[in-house]
Length: 284
Image (cartoon, rainbow, N blue to C red; front, side):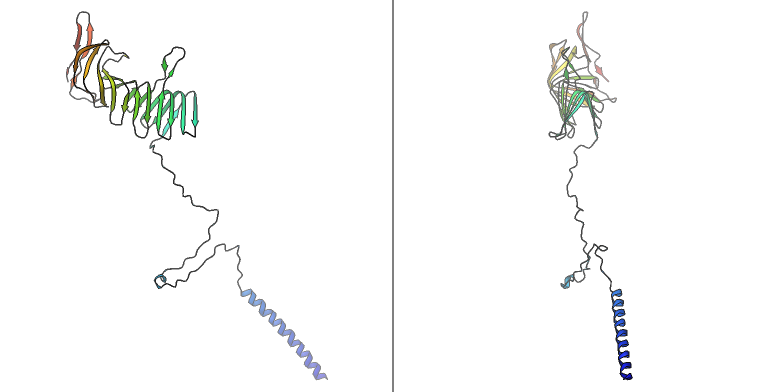
């Protein structure tokens, strides 16, 4: 009787010890098993096993999931054709037309582009075509045009009634031009301006600096190479607004600013004692 109790008591203790041992073993196994935290490792790595023998030398690289908010800008921004900085200003007002890409300047307007400057009472800038238009304004009191365009290209100055100029190509159309080349003045128009030369229709070339010169050489066409020479076709001489039979089939006049030899164009004039005369001509 006592022996059986002792066996039952020992059997119960053995079961309890076995249960405790199993619990401890399970906790140790769970402690050694790493847990995956999806918040700590947002980047998933996929390894691709290559079965093709030609691709076995390739190294498997992990692929990273991209943030959906991160985008690549594939818009190609066109570069402007204008190479220099453009500055413009005006006295009265400025108006912009976004749809037509135009800017309108009123009152003592000015545009500066590199070594070129254009002043006028009114300017219109077209960014789509890179063109600038310049006009004067008629004064309602006097009836005269004020603020006529004045275009400066380096050392050359051109006064005109109207100017349309392309800032990209350097070409332009000028109406009613007055410009100085060397010791002479050129009047005429319309004028076609290119970066290399100026082509004047109905041209007048003179050394008189008055708006209406006392004497001049009149030619239907005239070509000016700035800083070099003036070339004309058939021309005739006009004195005091009167046409004369004097003329030549070709004219060539140097206008260089540096010293060189050449023909000095004579001065044409009139005196009571001498009448019409040519003086101060020669060779230097």
